[in-house]
Length: 161
Image (cartoon, rainbow, N blue to C red; front, side, top):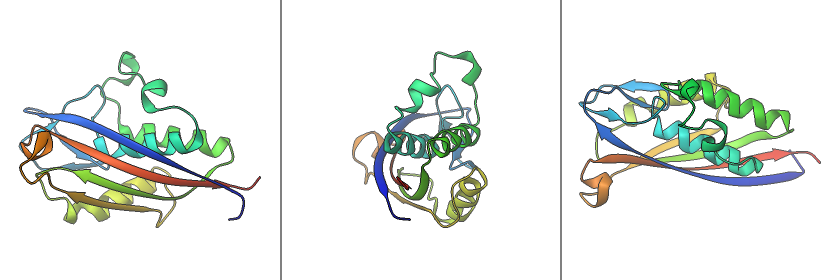
């Protein structure tokens, strides 16, 4: 596609807690702790949404889905991603690609990546547009001490002007 291209960066963190399911990239992963948050706390999808919104110049997820709004309590982040994708498509943008890096000491996610990509595509991300990878904290910081997880995402969107 020729024309206008924009890049956005997303970052999110959530604390690990007992008694909560771990959801990453829309996939429930067997782990002794899950991520704390107002919604399902899917740190990977939250970072991706912020990258997409940032690229489109449309603020961030806190503006669109505030944690003070009871309507978003326990929300499925995949549904929120669908809303974000609709919003940017309405402005004439198309997703070119997204690169996502999860920062987590445990669990290893490599075997879950194909399911995550499939879930993101089912929410509206274009086929073949998402790359997901992970890295550890090597025992350093809140990630290394397994207190929480973080995620970074970069998204490229394009439109013809």
